[in-house]
Image (cartoon, rainbow, N blue to C red; front, top):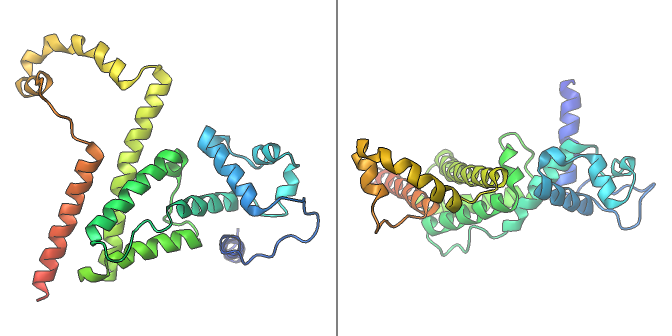
Length: 249
């Protein structure tokens, strides 16, 4: 593919994302829209993963011929970009009102993002680093940057803060997705696993006193790992902002 061809593909995708591509005038099927195609694709990916997604599968689900979809969008790559931007729009207003402290706003973003990954596990296979920026993605990023406006951070460091929070959420979401896959493959819940495994480990714990102390603590209270980690990430960002603010005074 030449540079010119690639640029043309990008322009086509951007036109689809931003709604500037004219609707097909010929051969249109009543009731068929790009939005309906995308919604169907998302439902398939949610149920069976990205590997199950194909233009044929979408067409069959909609009860149309595969070739009819190409009147609305060029192919699977463009469909994928539209799916990403559509689910990004589910968290409209995610950063919250401007009156909220940046820390509270970022925490809200992180929690809703985790919920999004749990609704759409296939998002973890997506890379936004070179994806097309659609209106929903642009709106979310704009709101995230806006909540950091009063922190005194440079634009580059604002983007780094956003990237740090996003990376933390993605990491935890991957752990949860793997746990869900393991439970599905094994047919046993985490509780069932540990109930069966604990007696097998117990005889060996005398060699590991620190582990034994925790393992046998009947008053042990488990932390919410996501919230605990999130607050520590935000602690670090807050300490950094405070240090930068003092340094600029």
